[in-house]
Image (tube, rainbow, N blue to C red; front, side):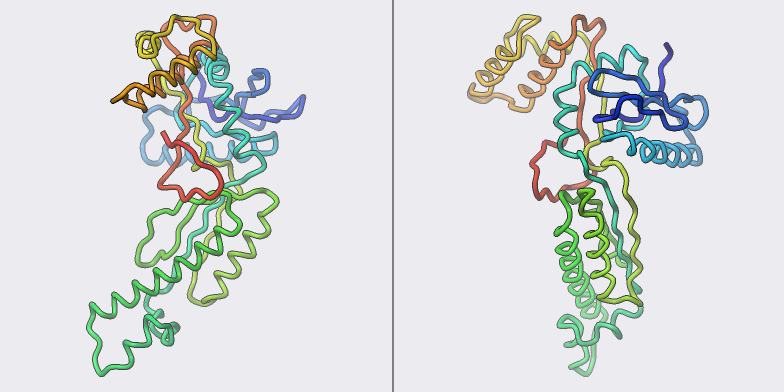
Length: 314
């Protein structure tokens, strides 16, 4: 079969789950692969700006439709594989996929952005400790004014982060500008979605007429656990075996022992050894690797403020 766009890996789907529109479900034991049924239109490999936007919108809609089926592990855009490659990818990386699924199960992604009306800041926050001193003297310079507003924005940002972090399992703080004083993507348990709404209401109450708050979600955890199938050639697999001093077909215990022994060597490259061990472990799950295998990388956006789980960001 020809290659199709792999949208997501699904876990915990009920028997007889019906595929959303535009999606074909490929059952692979515990997991189900969700593949787009048409890559000739919006799923073009080299889209222009308009096509890229259409692709992103359609892909997000498909991911959200998949949420009703079970835990959704989104796959990076433009991952095109045939059925055999998808089967091999899931088989080789089942342990990693299970770990990611456990982490984001019954959790949803939201984005909260807070803008303020910069021209009205001084009048509304006149009595704030950062602003009040400006009106105590006879003259205020532009640098002093800007510094005071920046300090106020920093304090409000910290207050907002505290409110949101009270309900977030994990949080990624995104860049903000003079007009955007708070911008974050967060992972929230389904049971805490209502508490997130309450936290946003408390933030809005700080300045109801001056804050413009945008809350997006719920959505799959694309910013926290994006699956990236990375191609590793047969030569690279052989090199990984050589790095650990292992023969082909080594079992899990042998791989673990070889990894530990290699990491204890003085001056070792720990990242290189861990990558080699992951490669060997994935290859060992397959009867044949032919030209190579697709490894599973887990990617995240931005810098994560991790609250509960510690993770390695590839």
